[in-house]
Image (cartoon, rainbow, N blue to C red; front, side):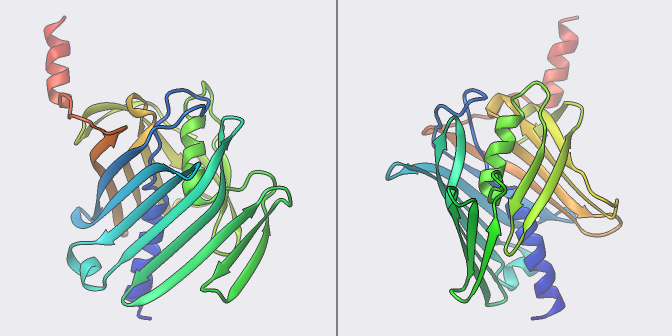
Length: 265
């Protein structure tokens, strides 16, 4: 595997962590609605790929599926692709995963793994390509990347959310900590939206990860940024949203909103 291929594998794994979207009517997940959403992915300001996410109910379970793929430039040439899903149920108002699967493909190199959750035993079993197997302790709260994002959105509906998580990675449990930043009006393909920005807390400032959530749409992510200081900058922007079978129509732009506000003075 070349250094370039390894770089794109890391980039698409990091981006795909953030492409899952959830839409809830209340802080308690008593009910979920199906949806489909699409994003554009940019690398250093240039379009690099696309991402799609869907949430559907299948055979009594809720299933989230996501797919990211390279559509422009080098990402397209090397055939970058990342697909994943998680299946689970609502238990006491929280989404609890039963199974998580991921498949990454870059430059014709495939990597697949399946995570099976056994909550009574507080264990997750991760199998890579049917060969390597890892048994990890869930510690009562570890979640896969997609389920974690559902839980994050639920917590962001609380007055003072605590955003400390344990995430099930390929072969380890990764502690994560996020902090909430000041609310911000953001220009998006859905119009000017009030957002709750969050930022990942790191031990050093060499890398950064930020996400903007829109309360008007159940705290979906409308923008995500990830990069290295003085290095590559990756950005993901929402382009379309269909909720419960209805296409979301774009609202006024931020400039129109400001003009309307000025006119009301």
